[in-house]
Amino acid sequence: MPLSEHEQRLLDQIERQLYAEDPKFASTVRSHDVKTHLTRRVKRYSALVVLGLAGLVAGAVLRAVVVGVAGFLVMLAGGIVIARSLQRLNGGETLPKIKDTKARPGGKTSIRERAEERFRRRFEDRD
Figure 1 (spheres, rainbow, N blue to C red):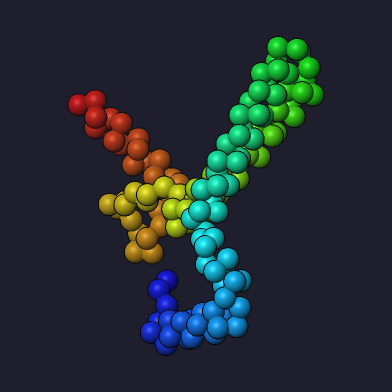
Figure 2: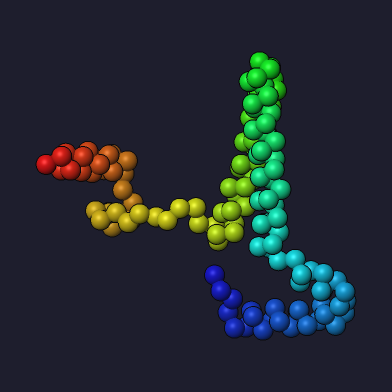
């Protein structure tokens, strides 16, 4: 949600005060934006996923269940962190939402209605 004009002016004023009081700290803080941080985080945890995959394969080759499970857990943890970081990079959106043509007035459809619609479409496609 964008800031209002008044909030933007207050933020600019606070930023100017910060530069006046401690220019070294202000330049350090300003040089690290969230996008750079999240991109760096994705790269680091990608290495962790590869390391976990190596542990999983090593556990399978050596028939060491503990090593394989540990490798899987490391790989899973790295994947979760990467997914969350990518989600934050994309502004919180995970996947584009599909519009339902027969949505209820509240905008939600039940699981049963969606299953019935898929079932109907399956037989319509055969004709």
